Picture: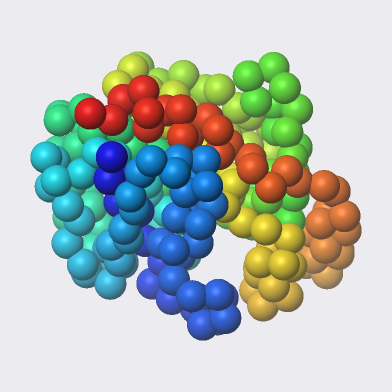
Length: 227
């Protein structure tokens, strides 16, 4: 089984400190999927994504861009996701990945008037309450045909989707850890939030987040659908 991470982050101060997003996502999931091999493709750097038949699953990462930005790399990504859907290649989307999957498959994602949210928040996830790291202003506001909302919160009603083909996606960031989330707030929070919101985001980091959030679910998903 070979899974490719689509790295959709162009690059910023966090990238300079922690390295590319693709390897971060691989580090998050590979311990729960030891039988798989992984690689990353920097689609935001105009690297071509794989074609169906050359991959057993894909993960679409977050991004500092929105689906409405229509950067040069975004249209090839959209076309590739459609090809992967047609070939029933299992896919998992994170944050921007969640949004662009919804947009490509018939839903809609926009810049939310609820503003930028980061730190930790609680979500209702298939009847359970979970705490997750997040960093987003954009949100899915129209659910694609055939998709089901499986996680939500007051601030983000469409926090995770399960599709009627092999696809899952989440708005939050299961691959983050506390140090990364703190640096994100310190580096970018002042540009995007009020002082009160900034302090609330910092305070939220005192809430414990499991270090294996969604690992088992995503690993089992790829085992089920990968050929």
